[in-house]
Amino acid sequence: MADWRIAGVTKAAAADRRRDEALRCFDELRDPLRRYLMCAGASPADADDAVQETFLRLYRHLEKNGELSNLYGWVFQVARNYLRDERKSARHQRSVPLDEALDRQGSLGNPELAAMSEQRTQRLRAAIEKLPPQQRECMLLRASGLRYREIAEILGINTSSVGPQVQRAVARLSEDLL
Amino acid sequence: MSECARALNMMSEFVDGELGAEQSAWFKEHLEVCAECRVALSEFTRIDNQLTAWGQSLGVRNPPPAKAREQLAARLALFPVQPRAIRWMPVAAVASIAAALVLAVIPPHEKPVPVDREAAAAFVEIPYLPPLDPRENSTIVRMNIRVAALIAAGYRVAADPDTVVPADVLVGEDGRAHAVRVLSGIEWKGTGD
Image 1 (cartoon, rainbow over the protein chains, first blue to last red):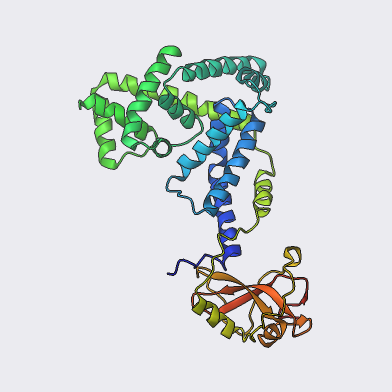
Image 2: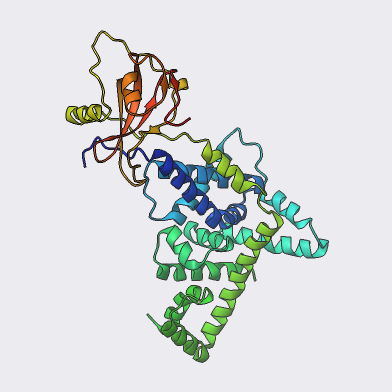
């Protein structure tokens, strides 16, 4: 095909397809992505901003015919980077410290149960923070509700390699959460 | 790899129910005879449950905004349809398009109406031609067209037939023009009423 040909006619139809694809991915990944971001310390509002921005970037990525062989990996990486950049930004004023976010969550419902739940959650969160980066990612992604097979895909490792990572992480968490 | 090491590596897939039948049977048989692995599985499950319960409770207590999907769809709709690139076509191809449009030769002294992007209309298919396949590659060629040629092609244009207007022509893989977008403020009524 001559190099002057471009995908043209069809630009409007192609844009529609990209929008549909971005929305389909949003439907599929929105909930685990929000949970992942909140587990990583984002406030709900920041998590929602990050989710929106991630799927807008996905659309732009598709528009450039970008490589997308690992959708899960791409989406979580972009959301993670967005959150990191937002935290670095001096303009960012809405970030809620994890403890404050947990306090807010704990204040709902039965106060005693909430306090116990909050204590457990804080211990778990603190224990996860101490893990090496890949094990920490494994645990946060698991908390987001993903299957271990999907976690392996996101981390770009074999499913069989997730087992040892998880085992080591669980062993460390067990020591800290006894 | 020892049997216990193998069993430990299988635990993540076991709790997700993703072990094959043969592996699952082996894993269960191993647990029956290995107290250490039973304890390890129990601990694995305990931490795993704690992790998933944590994420779930965060999700339940902080539900997503009700209109998040609609908001995203609206923002996506605001993205303009970006032409990837407009490249010049070989002279022969341009000539074939000109023929398809029944273009009269435009003398060099005839200045076209200036391009007015704000007044640019959408592409309108040329009547009586089969529509382009959605997967078909196409090319956009910018050229000056005499209004008379547009009228001859079946368009309804309320302008002096001798006027020359700038336009984008959409060319299909067959080398024929399939649609035109006029880039000036002339009264362009497309092909319908």
